Image (cartoon, rainbow, N blue to C red):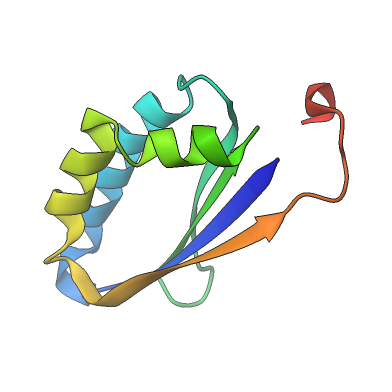
Length: 102
């Protein structure tokens, strides 16, 4: 299982647009085969900072996500909304190992 934490800094005046684009991407991403979690978070004290927490059963499922139409549309929509390039940090899941515990 693999998790990617995507850190995003959005231009202040584009926050509502970014949220709308991410909500749409989220709706589709949680239905993907191999998706365990797909959380969309906004920083409590800095509304221009976001975190996408993406958990997949395998590296292959994670890579397949990046080929979906909804991801490609999201990527293009948000490119000009960000204050700086997003940073995806991959992690290995140590616990829970049982996907039913997610």
